[in-house]
Every structure is written in C-alpha cells, then in structure tokens.
Image (cartoon, rainbow, N blue to C red; front, side, top):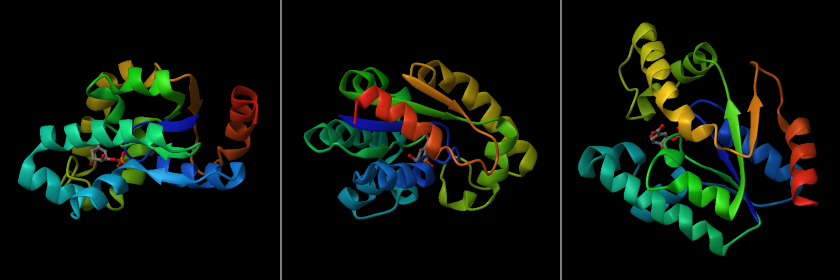
Length: 172
Ligand code: S3P
C-alpha cells in the first residue's frame, strides 16, 4: 500500500516525503515530477500551453498509475485531492496524510521560489496570503478527508511522529 502526502503548496510534502521514505526504506515518488517527465516540460509550461484542465487530467491519470507500483511514499501536488474524485481514489488505494500548516507559514515558505509555481507567480505578500487563505478554505474540504492529519510548526521535523503513525497503520 502506498502512502500519499497531501496538503497545500509549501506544506513540505516533497521535503517530508523524502525523509519519511528514507526512514521507512521505501522509494519516494513526486507526482509533479512524474507529470513533468511524462510531458518533458515543466508544470509552468504545461499550464501556460495547455491550461489547467489538461494538467488536472494528466495528474489524475498519473496518480492512478501509482497503484501499480509500491509500496512507496508519494508526494501529491497541492491540488491533486481536489479534482477528478482523486481524494476518494487515494483513500481507497492508500494511506493518506494531510500536512496541515497555517496561512502565515505557507506564505513564508512560498515567498521563496514562487515564480516556479504558476498559480502564485507575481503576487506580493498580501496578495499571496489572501490567495492562500481563500484557496485553503476551499481545499480543506478535501484535505480533511485524509486518514491522518498532522499539524506543523516551522522547523519541526514531522518524521518521528509520522513514522510511528505509519508503522501502526501499516503494521510495518
Ligand atoms: C498546484 C500545486 C503544485 C503543482 C501545480 C498546481 C496546486 O504542486 O501541482 O503547480 O494546485 O496547488 P506543489 O503543491 O507540489 O507545489
């Protein structure tokens, strides 16, 4: 069974996912990277040339393709759970973990490197916080369906806590 990490952009899915995979001795998969490899172009370029709905279709397909491999730790994109019944699919096929973070913590992290993320490119701090607050409110409907919800503070490693939770659930 795969472990799926979900949460808003900047919630640390890739960073924590890699650490958790190492600790569990499992492969790590980044769904955004899978999409970029499949398309041989960046997420930004896919959004620009094909639009969001093309990206969401691809994302749903490549998410489902992960069922054929594993066990692995899989970092999803921030929007993955919110389209194409993906959250139901994740909960049927794997263990879901929501990495929850405050608007302020997400904005602080997203300020660095925001130009690589098509949805938040060019926002100043106030616009970024406003965007995150609004999106997060819509998206938490999906994120809160995760089997495990972890609330994080800045700089705190989530891995020891996650390791215990995963070992208990998966009987590793
Ligand atoms: C998105 C988040 C991104 C990426 C795409 C759309 C979103 O992933 O999938 O830019 O809708 O929140 P990360 O959360 O890994 O940045």
